[in-house]
Amino acid sequence: MSDSSWTRVPATTGRAVVPGLLRSLDPLLRRWLPRQRWFAGKGLPIGDFRLAAATELVPPGGRLGPLGLLHILVDVEQPGRPPDCYQLLLGAHPLLPSALVRAALGPAVGGPYDGLTLYDAPHDPRMAALLLERLKLPGRTGNLRFTTEPSAQFPPGLTPRVSTAEQSNTSVVYGDRYILKLFRRVSPGSNPDLELSLALARAGSRRVAEPVAWFEALDADTADAMDAMDPKDAAGTGGPAAAPPGGREPITLGVLQRFLPGSSDGWALALASVAEDGDFRAEAAALGRATAEVHRALADALPVRRLDGGTLERVAAAMTRRLEETAAEVPGVRPFTGALRAAYDDLAKLGAGTGPGGAVFAQRIHGDLHLGQALRGPDGAWVLIDFEGEPARPLADRRRPAPPVQDVAGMLRSFDYAAHHSGNGPWAARHRAAFCTGYAAVAGTDPREQPVLIRAFETDKAVYEARYEARHRPAWLPIPLSALARLSTTP
Image (cartoon, rainbow, N blue to C red; front, side, top):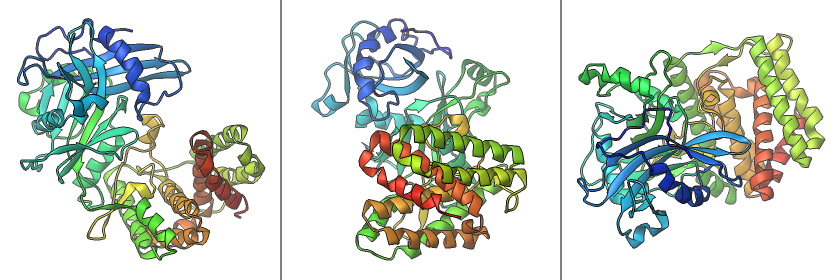
């Protein structure tokens, strides 16, 4: 347990927030953190905590009387894995209302919150409303930087409620206007969900739920640099904060985006179609067109590069390693490893210029695209959401350009999942084809005309799925194994 910090731990009210804070939180966090669905280290003992930053947004004894709102970043050390940094928004209450008991960490003993009960503040409508009020005002509170898009409008009466749909984050819906995604496991660098959504929105894309406000944690050097700026310039009406030379990048903590009331997610729509053996092909083709539009807009807004042979060979080698590691862990994968290796060998040959196919380009992509990441609005238009990529992967990997076919492969696997989940295999082939046809109508090239790429990326995704299902949902393991059997015989 340590009260040291990678930033300068701020006390926004002049109170001695830090001394003794982590000591009083330690026993509460040891009980509470492992029970949270977004905690990544389940099943491993917690070794130590380190307080990375603490900011009092509302001090007890201030505008809310005895109530308080504390923002902290805490590093959690566990054996066998690098430390994870988590964002916590903690409310403090002398007598917790019964409606918030399920969100309680417990009473603090000692430290600056001695005698107050601490709880997960996003579940408290009063605290969630205060956070929205803070997001409306660009500027700094301690090492927290709040930014608001100039066009943002905030009508009164936006009642907050916590969404039950999130897994790796926590989301608060405000009325039917906005949704605030709070990232729980965080690291330095702009989160792609902010970075890409903002780029798409500023390019005029309507295929994205545009951000209207966000907040970040600043490294001490970045905070000092901003303190030296003109106050008007430092207020924050641009993009995510940039790191000064030699400084660490800011941490994206939360993004407030347009909410899409009345929308249906693609997964639910697909399952309903499968159950009725229905025809979802028009919607699948429209989703393909929407995906291609997003890829085109990202390519226009952000850099695109051609992948050289060495890079493609390294990609193929990484895929081969994942296959071998998965086969060692999941016996059902082993019968297919020889044939599946050939898919990666073909990708390496493509890099070496000895295989069929043209140049391969990489750009920013969604990174974790599946039917659950697409919403169809009441007007029938598709919008893509959750651009943060696979949360389990390092942030640097999620921000790295990749071939757009990676997203296509993810969506094809999702159609396969929908069909096999409900026992209707033929449905998948029809709708996978419709998606590719729709994609080609906008992109100008059909993913099926890049057989080496699409096979390699779809195989890699199915290998990942096999490992995940074996660990977490064994009853679903036959779904990716069926795909690997098919891919092992694909020429």
